[in-house]
Image (spheres, one colour):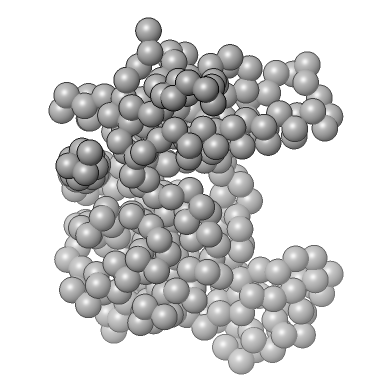
Length: 320
């Protein structure tokens, strides 16, 4: 029997956020189907018949066929992850199979769903580029650290020297969904020309201080926490002190402007406070993690996000 969902949650396998939100929606009497996009290969559950409207199905996490056209809301939670391709498929066929599954998923949802996206996958892809983020944050009026993206050894050393080597280095695109790289502080011995020339990296002014802001924005509501850590990258290990914070209205308006300019409906922002209390932009993750912050601070983020999805679903139903 087909699952008739109110909300589709498209994610990768073993995503705690997807299942926690699905359970919270279920408690409200709403049906959410979790589709693990990296497990579509060899599932036998992807189907779309051009001659039969509303026939399109995707398999949910339990293998049940889900009627895509029924959903009025699609949460594009995670569209990354290495596809689970059977071992007997090798060589170029593996890449071919992965591409075909991805293209089929995108086309099937685009043609059969009349749903509202949280957020559009193409907008999410574009907004994940840190160069795009930096320019938009600057245009929104936020203070952005001095930044150079370069593979030119001379330009990089000149930039670092000008800032007295108070510089950090970050990746442009990241190492992969399950292989995060830490932000690190630069030293001259870490910049051999051969390494710099290999590929561009983000070289950025070091913002002093130990006060960080993690701001979760769902629609037009913002939920901020202040994290205290002397580490440049507080994520690993996650041993910082955290507490709810009040976000000033001007900064909230700037963050909402960033979302609007990026075409997003939600975003998880990382900011830093200087010793004088000035807010400095670091980055946005269009589909960042937020439930860990509920565990550290007691902030009701699961309820807040479920409220947001429920409101968006009601909006879509009102248009029907």
